[in-house]
Length: 97
Image 1 (cartoon, rainbow, N blue to C red):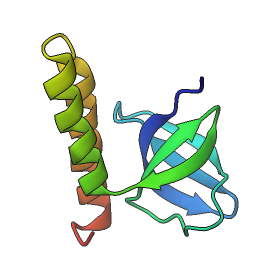
Image 2 (image 1 turned 120 degrees about the horizontal axis):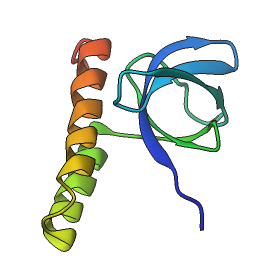
Image 3 (image 1 turned 30 degrees about the vertical axis):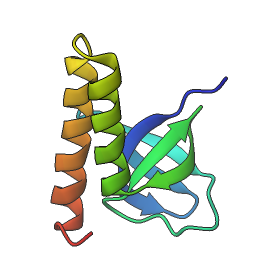
Image 4 (image 1 turned 45 degrees about the vertical axis):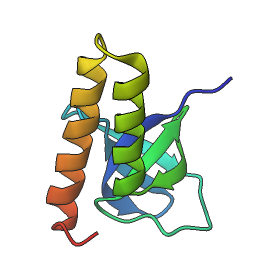
């Protein structure tokens, strides 16, 4: 089983993207998805340093609700990180998504 981590695209340069996992530290990832154009403010799923897919804001909100309902308490830190990703994505994209 593989685990992908959510991140926000900060900048794109060729086949690489600078991303933020919601912790304020910029990292580089290879753009591995070709069917969707990756751009600033996109919320993406990264596995082993490769962007493997995009997720919509609505998809992330749905995932957050699911985690909160099924897992209950004890996952506030994870939900806070997801919230940070949403805020950062909105800020970078200018809220136009």
